[in-house]
Image (cartoon, rainbow, N blue to C red; front, side, top):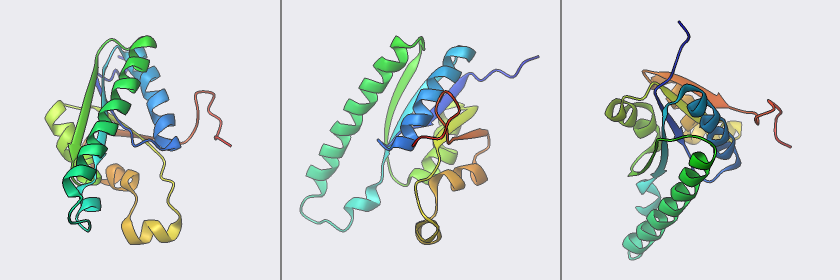
Length: 153
């Protein structure tokens, strides 16, 4: 029997890497007739150092995330994915993407873009994709190439 994924989670953050992951996730979801979960995590640690603008910044980040996810969901549907779920979450992306959301939504494939961090940044803050690979209980696909399997310029 051929492996078939039913619930695919793709993490999107507006980066070029996450755009590659989204594009491939749409194709995988379409081929598998799977439900596609579009996830954007608002890292609340970024707002802890800002005192008086916490609520306004968080609100703006939430609205931008919802708008981006709505646009991506529409694009996925135009490309043949019938079932798309948009999720905005708050907290640390690593744990949410690797464990909490997959458990909550019965995810069987996580697709993420390759990190854009350099070696020093990975050492100091760690790569989200690396953490997901190590801690997820389901399959993880780290996307590095476009649909033609070419590395972007």
